[in-house]
Length: 114
View (cartoon, rainbow, N blue to C red):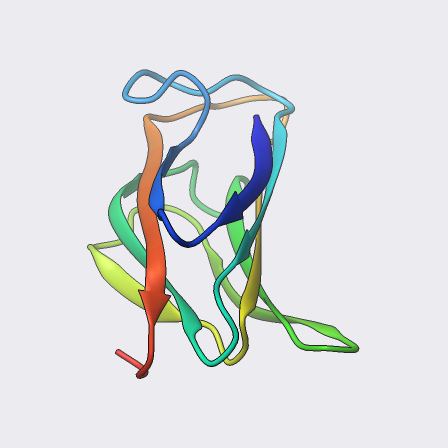
């Protein structure tokens, strides 16, 4: 799981085995890049992870640094996350015990913070 994603065209990303439970000890990483002058818009459509043990961590990738933007766990209502630059890095990690349904998010480019 994971990969290098670009906009256009944009698309949808899910946790492994979604909409069924993801596995134990999973790590997936996605790098999302949009055109110069735009920002990455990530829209969380569905989200259910083991609270406080499994995480979807979103990082903003500036030209010379990577900073953690948000770390999501448990149940999260639909939400929008906008990068401050043209690149975003997303990492999903699960621990060795309890699993859950997982997540689905979509990504595209935007020219404004939502």
